Image 1 (tube, rainbow, N blue to C red):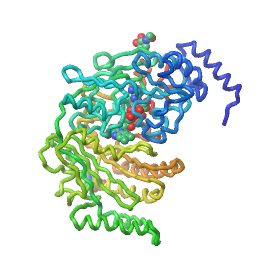
Image 2 (cartoon, helix red, strand yellow):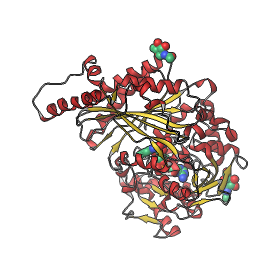
Image 3 (tube, rainbow, N blue to C red):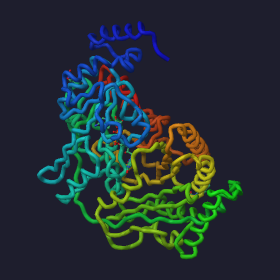
Image 4 (cartoon, helix red, strand yellow):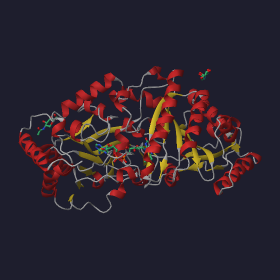
Length: 547
Ligand SMILES: Cc1cc2nc3c(=O)[nH]c(=O)nc-3n(C[C@H](O)[C@H](O)[C@H](O)COP(=O)(O)OP(=O)(O)OC[C@H]3O[C@@H](n4cnc5c(N)ncnc54)[C@H](O)[C@@H]3O)c2cc1C
Ligand SMILES: *[C@@H]1O[C@H](CO)[C@@H](O)[C@H](O)[C@H]1NC(C)=O
Ligand SMILES: *[C@@H]1O[C@H](CO)[C@@H](O)[C@H](O)[C@H]1NC(C)=O
């Protein structure tokens, strides 16, 4: 639908007049769309120069710098690549003046269209803010949001230090740190966001501030989980810790109970002498051979072992992180469980989740060894390839093995309906929300997540399918919606569902900030109003979760 030309002109005119009235709060009608950002983009080219502001022709490497194709397909009116906080400040002033909608991009790993890119608006690409500096005493690492974690680890490793960051090398620093951050060190240090000492922040009016517990306790609290709702962070000062070798890796298990589970769920295996039928027959041999060799387990045993760890919150202080995933490989019709674990002390003892006594067998394949933390990150990299379509959806609940087994059955039922879509790769990942992560709200005035003592051992379930074609988007969304509906209903019935939603894993449809509790949401809104009186972030930055 194309608006009549005169209406567009009237809009531009209207906004010109309003833009002069700087005290006037922004209303929805005034938010410019599409080509109406022309004036803002033209001014950005003048103010920042052609090497930092790209209008008409976007930088060649721009689209491919996003992880998910759903973000690559979004086309902004212009892209700016500021080189210092002063550039960001000038940009915020221009954006506020012209009231053109904008998005902020750090590593571009946000999963849905509009997370860090904006159709017809201005995308602030922070890629050039890529400084990494360790303080003289080695206690603080100052990291620009243009960095990806792999580079940060590499630089700090040379001085024997490490920070609490991502588990995949090319995940960006910015989004990860503003939405929590589950790391390989989560059971020792909690959320990555609880390990930020200071933020250099450009506010809506362009002023540049250092925000920490002493200087702005309210804003500092808000930034520890409040996402990009308060300003543009141009530098994170992170607590740095000594780097030591760890004991860890991935153990992969073939599951022998899937065929019987599918049969009991009435998931039919149609008989036809097709290639795919033959492949499916062959695929049944793999678990059988693995079982013969004692190198397999069942979904039930994996789930029980996880319960053992999470419910008892294993008091083993050396445990740094663990999680498991259940992945379906359409070719050759196989479900594999993988367990990732990392322990501080390389003492050689098997981790509980990969302990043959708990799991009932040896892993089909394992990389557990004494190694560097960076090699753990590098191990996950090949499993996270950019350039496909993805969807993330997160559900938080109190873990219970019996109930989770039913959830896994829901997943088996639902993937059966979509498994033939091109490039379909459905995965669910289960991660503990460690005790220290829940208690993170005690450190330096806390965070807005709103966990309490009575929440108990929580876990985050992430459903994260990958697929190839845009025309299958709807089918995949529907599959996830059905799985989520059944799961939520069951968890609600069992009294296990928790209101919290992890922002970094959330689906576009989820109301992340309502999960923080009404009181914390109210506080976040108040803080936003204090530091952004005109509502620039509330109204013009539209694509991601709003407080
Ligand atoms: C392959 C892969 C692996 C992952 N692994 C992990 C993991 O191990 N642990 C985990 O917790 N999460 C993980 N995630 C999720 C990840 O934390 C989120 O996708 C996160 O948003 C990525 O940050 P980014 O900077 O790359 O994303 P972007 O898309 O650039 O940004 C995400 C959001 O943050 C805002 N933002 C970014 N930088 C700034 C800034 N400087 N100032 C203001 N706002 C800003 C953006 O506007 C956007 O709304 C993973 C994701 C992927 C795709
Ligand atoms: C898990 O849930 C089931 C079904 O509601 C219940 O019978 C069982 O006691 C629960 N287990 C634990 C450890 O709470
Ligand atoms: C910008 O906003 C901040 C926070 O409201 C305020 O302290 C500061 O004085 C403002 N700066 C200007 C130049 O208006």
